[in-house]
Length: 251
Image (cartoon, rainbow, N blue to C red):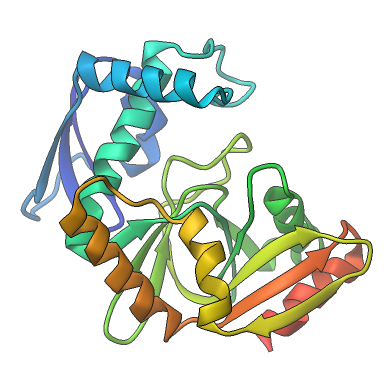
């Protein structure tokens, strides 16, 4: 199947094996555009089988697309969505972008990214922001946003790869804070320096196998660390947890 989409302001033509990829990326499909297409994404059965091997070797469950989609684990249709993300993430450093595991929420059109190992509570914490801020808050992406580093700003973009809740929107916002979450009986947050943050970041950022692109990702990380405030937080699931992070990161 052939279609055109735009991810993180990069226009690309896509050739996929299954129609499901276009459905999965439907919010990012571009029907007509006067812009020049900068990338051609071709997905093969070999790419799909590579994702199957990676998933089986890791021993981790492949997430479903949400309860509304009856897609079995390791289905080639779903594995193709993972292959597409990997291929996009491989060329994004050339566009001054990189993929990061985290959940992003916007308030007053400014983005705040929460990151932690899977299952630690990113979505739960974002739900607190949504609960107490209501329509003032908007989730940009729930799992795998792209970050773009420019001379003056770091921008964070929604993508179709948004976790089991599928919280995502085709939008970019300026990134104004990154918070490393951990569970705790007492809510506390502290600002940390880039040296302290780097070990956490390295585990949450995608690095391609290509040495040149991986090196570019490190350069982008270094630039980002100079522009975006960093925090470390221990929290529960109370209103106090929301007040703790919101107060520290937005004021």
